Length: 470
Image 1 (cartoon, rainbow, N blue to C red):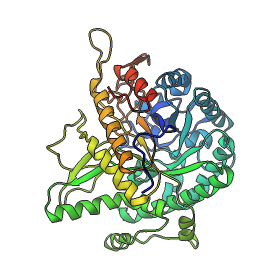
Image 2: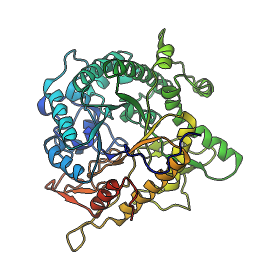
Image 3: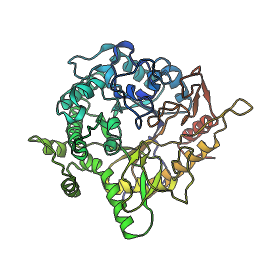
Image 4: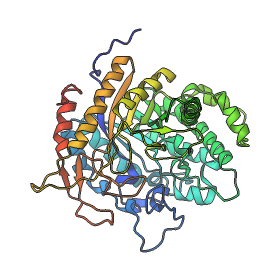
């Protein structure tokens, strides 16, 4: 054993994470085209309007107006001692329809300015290339990732942003929570099923095309940016057997590896043996081109970025469904839950870190972890969010224990350090931030930013590199 780390390394990445579609707003400004996020009025688990309905409220269209307020917001992040900040590039700001040959200069310039501001304030940009933001035109005209043509469109996009930001961005991730193709394919890959198609076949075919695009992206990224790290990103909240009944244990293992199937391909470089039976039982026939498997094998990702929010329990023959927080399941009587019903399990975070590092022996980066709750102003005009402090403290403690266990952990970016639109429900009321944004579920509010109690607590935690958790 060579890893004797007992505390977080000095170069540990501390920061926060948002997504362009949940924060920026300015949904048609400076040449931006529509993307799938613009068409969900109630979050990615709700209805999808392929044609926007005039007069209907879409919460992402303004979001928290980060597009115009990013300097103010990044100043707050700097004050909390962040040394990195995760966001995404909205694909349709760079290629409004997704299939153009030349990029939109105004979109490129916005991210130039955004990354410059991060760097000026001492933060490494951590960039997701596709974060639930597939251009809408690629969905309506091409069927999204069902269509192999999207590999070429995606690579045109990657080429434009890698060439433009190669001196500014070191940390990249390709597809946000790509394994949510299982549960929310509309968000993860712009896939909306017809009534007659074999859903499993479509999901695995689209995923294969995304695997090819991922490998080509890694190849290009390493050619253009030799020092850059190109990670994959997964939703890896965990699931326990509901009992020690053998059928519960085995079925839970089956559920978990349907999620781990995606990093198995992208980090190990080949389709796992268990996929064969899944495909046979679901009449899946993935069309592959010559050289696809060699490409996937040759260009694996450099690290595993992932989200962890909760754990659930699973029972034999129970649902294999899930949402933006991870796989659904039965109530665990040993855990408390958030107002949105998400169980709180810091020990599960340590368990997951160990599970993933044992499986892949690759650097890990927790790029999403947080608690969404109701936040109310007290009589003194402040938000006393001790529940958020307790949540983060317990998860950082668990994270440190995992590092002592031998896990190689690059960093921790809390989701989301400032209140933003919920991806799952489209709400503002479900608040994660250390900074409150004055806006409600109907879009009413001044957008004023207000620090919560957790703001100053996080500031001192990061200043101590995770040692001062009092």
